[in-house]
Length: 418
Ligand SMILES: *Cc1c(COP(=O)(O)O)cnc(C)c1O
Image 1 (cartoon, rainbow, N blue to C red):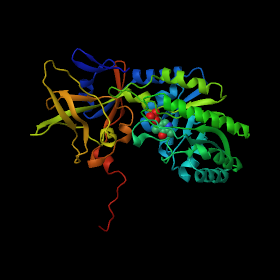
Image 2 (image 1 turned 180 degrees about the vertical axis):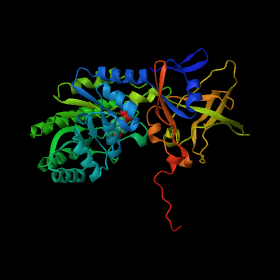
Image 3 (image 1 turned 60 degrees about the horizontal axis):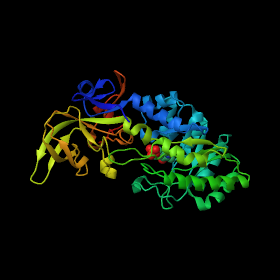
Image 4 (image 1 turned 135 degrees about the vertical axis):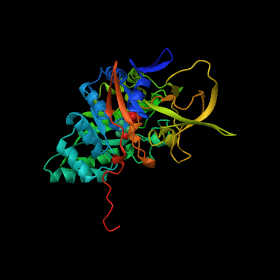
């Protein structure tokens, strides 16, 4: 469900025609629907109302301050994976007691920042990290609340780059040695164990990996308790998929029905870290056609958004639906590659895609681009990053200005003796 739909022949976001926004802010730009964002957050929240819980939105999916603020006003927290994301979350007004900090490579300075902010907990991923965190907390005369990220060795059956819960990944601590890790953590005087964390991957389209993993984690929690280690929080991570094309991921209520029986008698507050499922279909990338190019073997539509704006197709071979912002009856359908201006053959938004013919100057909407879209954007080819716009009803807000050339060189210094 989302609020991008045609009225007559024109694609709208809620009550606003997208072509009018393109005239105002230029292209390419990311466009988010307030009604869709709030609906997705609320649906997820309500699905799990039977268990005490907190939704810590995964900031890496979409880190715009306005969007983080929106979730904060709805009672949400944040899952951050760097000092920069912590800075953003705090800046957006997310209360520190609703922030969790994951990631395999936290450095000392980031630990200090998070301890200073007094976040809810660290999701620790190795024994060396636990020892360093203990040391840093000790230097600061404080205690770090910790969940150990446990890797349940469950195959989420998704793209290998976004599978994180298998033995062979860099993430978490293997469940077979998790007990030892917890016992080590218990000996560290500036560490307070409060939880268990797990996150098995992203764009998961079936409930069974969640059920398998949480069954194993629930057993671990019982074992920890018999050893006198009290667990108050179970952080189940994120990973629920969305329909980009014809996949049919479980609805949050379906996921809830499958996992609540495992969660409800654990006596834990359940933390969720959804990213994609909240924002993915709430955002699109709007781009303008620059040229069409026919070659003997292939037809290309060259647009003004590239892999620097949306890297998912190039990085994971991801599918994003592409729709015209203005539909035209009776247009010929063609199979084309929709490509960007970047000097790389891997720069494409769609390959061998059948679309209605478009002319230079027309607008296309790259759908389901709200998650891992702008956050993965770069300045490759010295391209300023796109603007971001939020629509709420019949109003719209520029929530991030398009970068200017000056932004591209900020911080660079040419030494005098060159
Ligand atoms: C990426 C990530 C998430 C969010 O994943 P989605 O698939 O977007 O829901 C949650 N938790 C952790 C630890 C992550 O790394």
